[in-house]
Length: 315
Image (cartoon, rainbow, N blue to C red; front, side, top):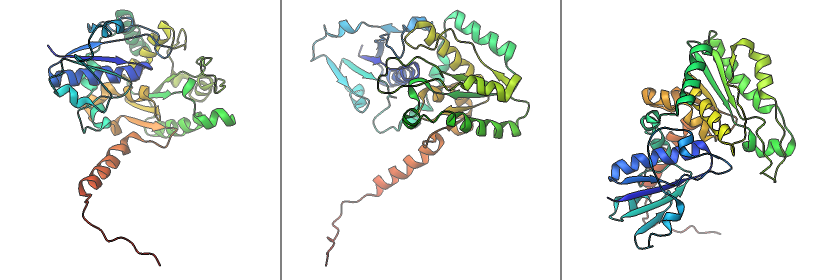
């Protein structure tokens, strides 16, 4: 049987979007999916440390035994090879994989069923269920503030601390005016170690303290053992945060964060569009507006003509 081998890398959410989109492509092309899952400083764990779902895993050393004539190495833009008769197709990526011509946002909205099939290991699922049962209210607002190594460059260089929390406070306060009975679940990696990133220095902003002082008993936080993503426990706690965010009714996420995007997968399957369950904060990119922009760009491409045009004359 023809095979599709993927090697996802970078952080947890980046790996998940590669894995889930690859599962979708493997089903479409009738290929057997195999995964090369290597621990990395951004995700220092094995797949089996997170999920019980069985997947075929291969060692990266095994690929060297395959002759170059039998394996086709592709990037995210070369997925048309999956529809060919190539016996083995290999892709190393941290991006969504789609059919040729598919826009990543359109693919992402189709990954919810695959995400909901994931079965976390037993103790992780029990921790999520216990938190939802004992601490969540009937209406929950999820807030994901991505900090750590992803702090905005200008904030790091100029030392503008506290600007991000003000942006989130504005959105949360507006939401609570419409839903005063709602509680807030906060997920953040503020204070994560950044010794590996030598270009910038960074100090914690104290987001948990600021949210606690502002919202008091409305705030729910899952206490993490460590924020270090190179540690297995740090990635497992991040997965718990991700699953808890998926149990909220609406999420305010950090612009540019793939983790924020995966925080709505449970609701996305029923609500169909990200606009209804997610709003990005703290950046110029707003995901619900990407799709209309892409549609306009596609229309321009369709209407583009190479017919002869008179050259401009200059005096």
